[in-house]
Image (tube, rainbow, N blue to C red):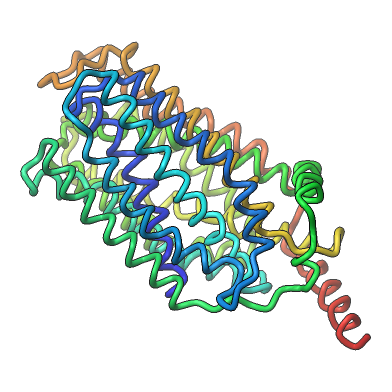
Length: 442
């Protein structure tokens, strides 16, 4: 639970930058959509490029607090300050606002990378048990969705309550920065790091580069990496259009925060079920089923109409939220891949691997955000208009649902080839235990 609190910084960032930042800068700060998408994409790419090196550094870090936790306590304060700055842009022309956003994201993403990569790596190290890893991920996912709730629908509702406009967003951004700070400090003071093999201390930067290439050559890691990157690209497109679709197409502008909250609440409730399914049937199978269910609901979005009875719309949101709880499973799947890598290489290198993981995930997110920024003007969207045209509304629905569904379908076709089953992982762990016991006795 205390480790999971650190996820608040990750998920608030994910939700607010994925759902709120785009409409804030287009409709409030009045920055053209293509420039907003470009600035966010540049930030994600810069952030991702740092992650492999950050992972390598955390693998080699040795302090009395461990090798991951020192980054929590040293990065969370500047991260929170930079986050608050994102929501306080100056009043000026498009060029001024664009470069301010690029600069704010530049500093924020540097601090975030030094926080999030060691944080994720520690989660993979807290347990070597197949089922317990699923439970750890599920517990962290509760905080993840709490952060999504606060950083997404909660941010929008609180900004309106704080007066709306620039001032409302600035106040809420500063408040959420404090929440992120508390979450990061809780994870630092509330966790202890397990003892790691002494081999983890050795290694040059040249060896690190060789390890990265070896990771990309490992079939299990490559499959889950590519599949998850495709999925997050589609999900980023979906998130970027969410506010526009809920407000302009579904006619629930004032109720949009409530709808987003209901969706995330349903996903949170579903976590224990998805964790149980992952333990019983295997994580990769449960993940594949989750993707298929999400494809179904996203594909149905064009038929949703503002004239629907509210209870029907609420039921649709609730059931679709229940279907996405399994999206937290890839992190637990990657932790199992590390065991396979240790059996083959004799080394533990979670930081380096998670550096590659977060790099590719952020590149996928950058592509999704950039595509949304380019597409929005071509859909006919008019920023600040009281009502969009019927043609624009139809195009927004397609961009929010069926287009991301195509990405999810591609992701499913990739991850269904994942070779590391639950049974195979148990065999790997048995072999690792035998090796460690033999080493200890020797």
